[in-house]
Image (cartoon, rainbow, N blue to C red):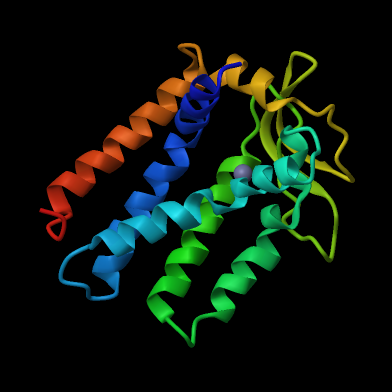
Length: 195
Ligand SMILES: [Zn+2]
């Protein structure tokens, strides 16, 4: 797959997280009494919202296959990541809460399953290694909740995943574009600091 196509697919796949990051920045800036939401807030919101998925860069650097197993990294462990963000509260209360909220939204999003039943998040790691998935589809059946003892997925290579969900007009891609469009509309209406 050409690099441009891969980057385009990853951008579409990230639109939902980016949208959540923009919305979180917008509302939290107001909550913390910022007169306007600045580029720094929006930029950090997007960064924190996509941060866990940068673990595919680790797979790449390590020479491992770039696939869905990236979600088993420490970057996808809510207690460690959100705990780490909140531990920085004394340094910067506002950005610490922004990071915690954006990370939380990312992990909730990853908990919601799709046709790839292997998604999910180890919410209680390192105390418990069970993986929580909700609304996943497995063997043609839709499960409301799956609380599995361990990862049992067959890794889905990045390129297969991009082709399946993000490089075709799918329900998932439509939802991502819609969330992103809503976030941009909110930013344009309320983000007075940018223009
Ligand atoms: Zn993720």
